[in-house]
Image 1 (cartoon, rainbow, N blue to C red):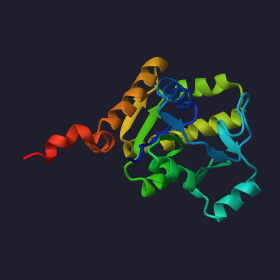
Image 2 (image 1 turned 90 degrees about the horizontal axis):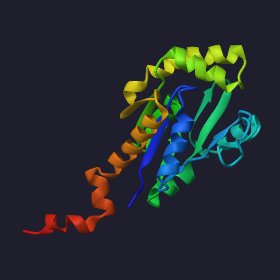
Image 3 (image 1 turned 60 degrees about the vertical axis):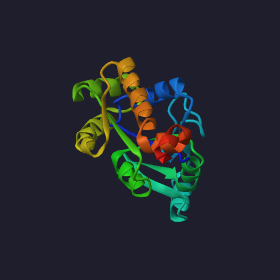
Length: 204
C-alpha cells in the first residue's frame, strides 16, 4: 500500500511553512520530508527539523553522488530532496509532504507522477511584500528580489492540482487538510488501503 506524496509550493512569504505546520498538527498521518539546504538557519530553526543545513561543498558532493531526487538554486541558496529516503517512505505507505519550489516540483513528478501538487498564492503582491517585511530577517535588496521572483513563480500555478489562496490563515489550513483528505478518498487509494470494502466487485 504505497503512501501519497504531496507537493506544496509557494513564493517566499505566501505562508507555505505556516500552512504546512497547521496541517501536520491536525493530521499526524502526514510526515514532512526534510530537505537539504545551504542557506543559514533562521531564528528558531533546527538542523534536522526544518532542514538539513549543509555547506555548499557538502551539498555539491551529495548532488554529484546522485543522492538527490531534485535540487534547485533559489535566491542564491541550494535546496534538494533525498531520493532514497523519499522512495522508501512512499513504498512503506507513509503519506509524505514536500515543501519545494515549482522547479523542484517538476523534477519530482518525473519520478512520482501521481504526486498531488498544491500551490499556495498570497492574496496580492502587496500583501506578500508586507509579510516579507514583517519577518525582519531579510535586507531590502533580498525582499525586492523575492517579490520580483514571486511574479515568475506564480506563473506556474497552472501546473498544480490544487490552488489555495492564503488570505485567512485558518481557512487556508482547512483547505490544505481537505486536499489531503480528498487525495486519500481517490478510488485507487481506497482500493489499495481498504480492499475488503471492494469485495463485491469480485462477485458475480
